[in-house]
Image 1 (cartoon, rainbow, N blue to C red):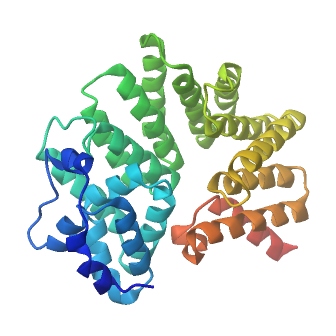
Image 2: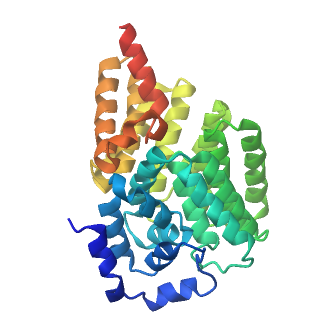
Image 3: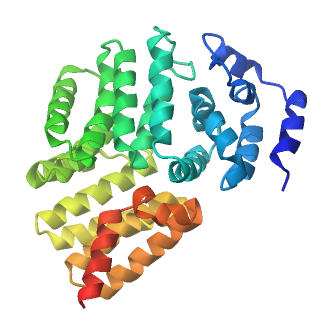
Length: 353
């Protein structure tokens, strides 16, 4: 493994692509005393990821790693250009959150500060609407809900009131608020989503499916199971293979299966969740995040049928996948990936048996 100093010596041999320069032309992360961070963001994405992989989990590199990743340009560039960017950033952020609390909040605060001083950023900018929408959804999926809400609010402001863009933001915002138990704010946002669905003409079918699925999850998390079931059915009726992404199809199956359980429809729930597991397995493999998430939903279904030992086995398989993808930190309560409340319930239930 090359040392960080070895990588530093190669900076002069690295060149930024024209596209990267264009993306930075309307603003750079040019904070005093942050020369390392500024230089690093100019490097190619594969080079950056290689260096960060070497630095992560090394106590001696906490300071430079924190400086580099507190640069929002670097983070958004990795998310945009690195195929495994979400997994990589989750691992880096977990390590920094463990070492120094509220690191992710610092990154979001830096974005907020930059955007406040640079209005009218174009969509292709690294801190433009699409990038912040992507970053916000990533933070929500990784359980940094409060930080996700802040980023999504910034993206919403960047939409400048354009209904289609507001719909894209609001479907994630409702989820982030519901998952963080901010139910009153979640209901307000869900109402906004319904208004936008009725207002906008020509919504792409896949976006419409994603929105109804997002509403189904949001209603489920706020214990509005009838509404969740109805939104899930709408999403299912609109599904069309070849138009909707595989992730979206699996997401609809997963959520509607949970709503069916809440509505005491076990046979429908079984059909949906087994389809979700099959699709996740065949399309993404047994070591993917989406397969692990789907396994945990399947374990919930098994537990509802009083198949406790099977539920524990399936949950253990999911935990092992999360550990493989993100490392052992992903299993610690304050940094957990996946369905932590369900795992804790199984552990508590097992202690009483």
